[in-house]
Image 1: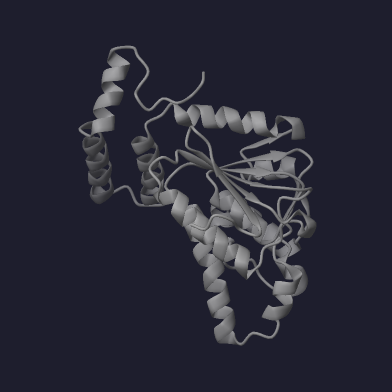
Image 2: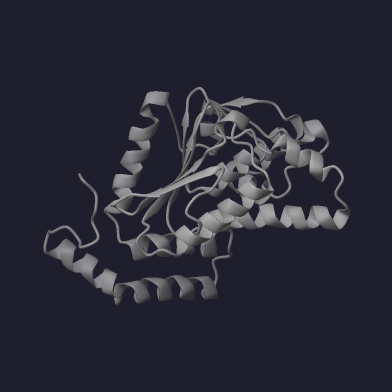
Length: 267
């Protein structure tokens, strides 16, 4: 991972909480090819670091992200089909790296979150947004579709809601985003950080190995038929983790009524 990025700030605190901040406030944190490449690199690096326990995805300025950068879009207008395929693949790869990040991820959302920004939010495990934030799947307004973000957005809000917001491109509120499941919480601007910190505190009490395994379990089990193969898989997962080092430590800590060795929460 590079030491500095032109459009990103990256920090890991002493607890192992990483914070990745979109830092193009003058452009409402719109993303282009370089920012997409940098995010992919950062997500892959942080996900591979054992000391990282969780990641917050945030943004500086008035907006979380306005989606695609206008200059980048102008370049894309002249791309061939093959060039568009390559360009879309890079965005899809970045989204997949966030969606499959091995530690818990939390989006911190303020202001506008338009277009591809909603894909970033949907790829995170949790999202806390300001009550004043606004959302829009705006692609059809300019003759495009929310294609690469669609698997994650549909998973977050459901196909029924996607049929509406993919086709109307209407702006919707944080309250509606919370009801749809895109946001986990909608709070005042002043409560954003304290609400996220509460979630982090809960995560830091838990076994890092078990937390990552729980994320993997969801990806494997979601929308699968409950058959003998799936039942066997779930049995294997609990048996494996029970005999693991962290599984044994967790059980002993519980029985001995003491904090487990990994507990870094302040509460």
